[in-house]
Amino acid sequence: MKIKNIINSILFSLIIIGMLVFNIVKEDTEISLTERRKLAQLPKFTKDVVFSTKLSTDFESYAVDQVAFREEFRTLKSFFNVNIFGQKDNNSYFEKDGAIYKMEYPLSESNVDKTLNVIKNVCDKYLSKANVYSAIIPDKNYYLNDDHLTIDYEKLKTLVNDKLTNVEYIDIWNELDLDCYYKTDIHWRQEKINKVATKIKSSIVKEKQEEVLYNEENVGKFYGTYYGQISCDVTADDMYILTNDMINEAVVYNYETKETLGIYDKRESNDKYDVYLSGATPLIGIKNPNVKNGKELLIFRDSFGSSLAPLLIDEYENIILIDLRYISSQILDKFVEFKDNQDVLFIYSTMLLNQNILK
Image 1 (cartoon, rainbow, N blue to C red):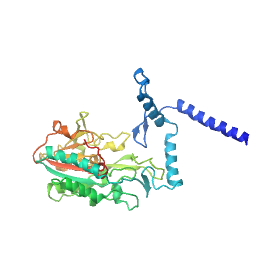
Image 2: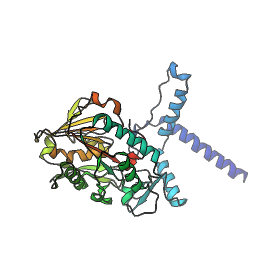
Image 3: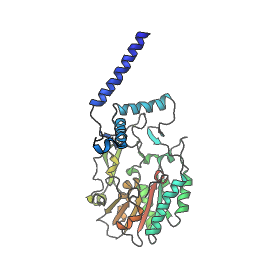
Image 4: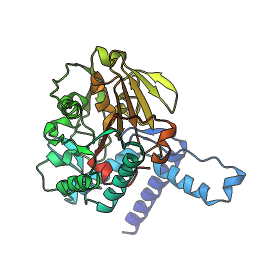
């Protein structure tokens, strides 16, 4: 028994020392593809930080992010939580029928109210003479026949319409179903939302619109934000973009970087969803040289709006997308010209409305 204990102690020590040595000599990883984020790097040891708490905090983040076999440990933890311990989810993520979901629960009425107050203040301050509309994008859990907890969607709709009394609500929920969403991500698939775009345009112009014809182009595999969050047999999504002559000839201007781009220029990115209008940014303008009607649409949006906006350009000469997560609503008039009879659409996902992140 004594020899067995000695051998176990030696083996355990060798494993610990081996892991330590391996962590020291291995090359640091810059990006986690499954988490779609940059990993912490070794902090610089300068005289200004050596005696501060920042050094220890930064080093702790670095050690956690760069530990050897990190992705394997995350997968193993997920496997044990779901398959061994019988948990229904892993940190709120769960799998069903080859797709990954994240529980959104409960409905935070206080957060929704704060979010709606930002929207209402924008309407009162800038949009008193505009044609203002709103739409809510349901998360894919709404369409899942499952016993996991979800937010009260009808209550959320009621909160929005009770607060935004001077805004016309466009209900797009019947234009969507589960197939309209990526299996590994929160977002909807652009090639599946033509009916949504048609419903929005019909509601704004007050006459029936026909669905526009597009060409579908496969731009590769998409590993969404949910991919790698739970150990299950889920394959990457195929990502498609919709094109036609108008989309191909549209010009995108990024007010932050002052770059002029095309609709789908950013095809090589750690986040494949950045292919739509080159990713998250405070302010983007789209000019359609094929339309000369003088009409302009302002879209207050989250990331879902990036894939929707290209499908609305056939009706407008200009579209401006505003993301209030990255720019304060108090200074919008310094960057955006607000005009009489301008069309305005507030379109946010249920997940964003349930948070308090608008400025």
